[in-house]
Length: 304
Image (tube, rainbow, N blue to C red; front, side):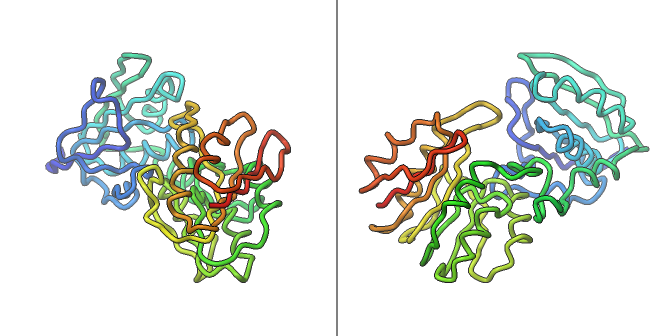
């Protein structure tokens, strides 16, 4: 049986459904500064609480990491909304050799189990859910990051319409580095800060963009970019948070861009056509120009 007393939590499960113990180590790749579950020694935790990700491959990978990090007999509590993978968790745990108890509350499924002494299928789940080179994209990618197995059409449209930029700039929500490739193709770019909330995306971006002018930063842009005096900002801002549409995300990105740019600096933004960003752009920028409207997307150039 386990002798360790370390606790861990992955994500931010609703406290009324499952509360993380005080002092638990946070492991979510979407919480800047969190520790890496990938790097924890096998059997080093007595209990883990996991808010499971919605994607099947990513969820099985996360479960496998959690089980590996637990000592035999260690306690795993894992939950998710029923319609976002929750209804599959018990079955998935059983494939790893776990004996599962399951309850339902507030549209969540909550599963508990102990780590069995003999785990099955962990290596396969880790291999399937880990970093990989995608020949179609020509890039390193990781299941669970934004647009991990296809080029996002908004980013492609922005790539096709981005002029050569110059000076110091930033890519807000850089993902695995798709737009950064195009930005850095301009020899007049001096420095590019690549910011994202997803540690995994940044690790892939660092593999994909081998350029001394590029620098990755793990940050939640909503709480500030830490950048000032920039010549340009490029972005394809997210508009979903936890699967639900959230227009305030993009609006927050626009505000942070305005704060980060110097007077005369320029923002290049691509957005789904239905998103009402003009109202946020116009008070903050001296000139806002709709450059392209195609395929359900709009591209704006906004000068501070």
